[in-house]
Amino acid sequence: MKKQYPNYLHQMHLAEKKLNAEDRRTLEEYLNYCRLTAGEDKVQQRRRYVVQFRDIAGVPYDQFDRETVEGIYLVIKNSGREDVGKNEAIKNLKRFINWKFEDMNLTKNLKVINIRKGRNTKKINPSTLITDKEVEALIRACNSLKEKAMITLFVECGLRPQELLGLKWDDIKIDEDVGQLRVYSNKVKETRILPFKTCVIHLLRWKDEYQFPDRRAGDLVFPNPTHRNRKLCRTYLSDLFRRLCKRAGIRHIFPYLARHTRITQLKKELPIAVCSAYAGHSEKTSATYTHLTEDDVREIVLEKIYNIKEPTPGERRKFEKEIEQIKQEILEYQERLAELEQKEAKRKEGDEIINALTNDPDSLKLIAKAMVKLGLLGKLMKI
Image 1 (tube, rainbow, N blue to C red):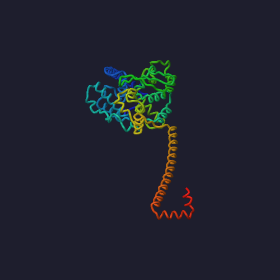
Image 2 (image 1 turned 30 degrees about the vertical axis):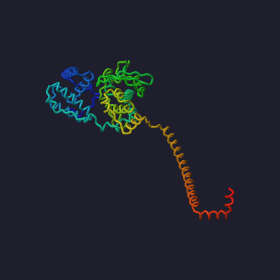
Image 3 (image 1 turned 90 degrees about the vertical axis):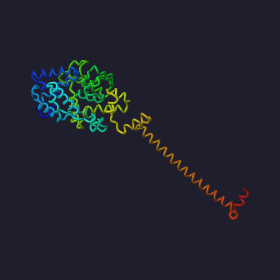
Image 4 (image 1 turned 60 degrees about the vertical axis):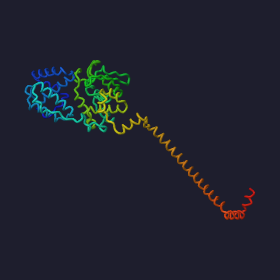
């Protein structure tokens, strides 16, 4: 029994070699049973899990007992995989054991991991979404044209991992610098068309350097390194992200965070119905893929509801200059108004003095005598 869950990315063929004739018969019978209700992609996924269980146990399927099954369960539970991936492995283990031995007691202690609300808000929230700098770092860390094409296409279109890995060349059309992607989702059993642009150059370069000779329209865009007609498993993408993040010296970014990031970006610009159609799910599900900050909400409401748009840097400088000019004009008007108010106050004060003097006879005599002395009374009379 292995103590840790191995990385089977390039070791599945080694694990399959350990199967004896009876193991292979058991495996094929189980897969035929699975084909009654599951598609071929799901069947191949179950094949990989069952082969891995045999490799971890280290004994043939016929020798599996309760201790062996619980030992495999503990290896899965204590592995470094995401909880969603652990649960997928646990479910496959229970399905196979229940089919093989028809004894529910062997799997009664195999509990899946409880994941609250189906999404870890500590891992997926506005502050954890992928930044443009991190995307650039991932691309620079790629060692091949294939990796660059995978990362750029996956991030730009917000694809599900299985959608990316199931693409064929006849699903892609490129007209000059704009491309169009036909995506089929096994999850919702629907096909949707997605435009793309940023990743065109990387996709064309990979197309020219395709790993197999005589590339055909029906070939997988990102095939298994050794089998052109076999898809890469979903764990390949997770391992690729892990390796690229380590190589780039950035935080760990898991694939589905790229989908959350892209859909959140689109939600800022597109109506919910369009965004949901782009992502390939219902409007209700779309809400779980949207992570808007308070500033995002404010910007969207101002622009979409009140038609208030943030000015560009050039417009902002122009507005600031005009505001300063208006402030200066207001200041000049205030100074002019103060002068006028001061003159008006002096005029009123003079009128009050004159009124007071004209109503006092003694004061008039004193004024007349003063004017005589000053020689002003004669001049006043002439006037």
